[in-house]
Every structure is written in C-alpha cells, then in structure tokens.
Length: 58
Image (cartoon, rainbow, N blue to C red; front, side, top):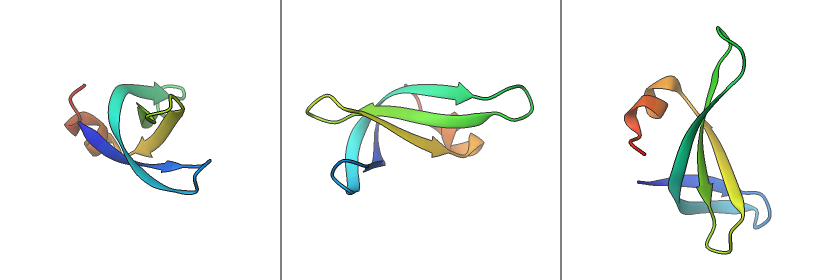
C-alpha cells in the first residue's frame, strides 16, 4: 500500500510504499505511525490516527 509522507530533506510530500506499522509511547498514550522508504533508501515516518493505522494492511 502506498501513502503520502513528508520528505524533510526534499521539503515536499512524496508517495512511498508503507513498509511497517509502529506504535510509540506507553499504554494509554500510544502514538501510531507508518514507516516507508524513499527510492534512494532514506526512512520516512508518518504519524496517523488509530483508525488509519488499523485500516493499513502490511
């Protein structure tokens, strides 16, 4: 699945394949994120809502 990430180095939004789903934080204060990679190998992270996190199949 593809998602739109903000690439800090290029300072623009890019489309990238989602490689994994990650949960940050302690119980009760979780933050949900999607991880991706640029074609040149740099990592991208996008924080999303719980509903969007559950919707993504990786």
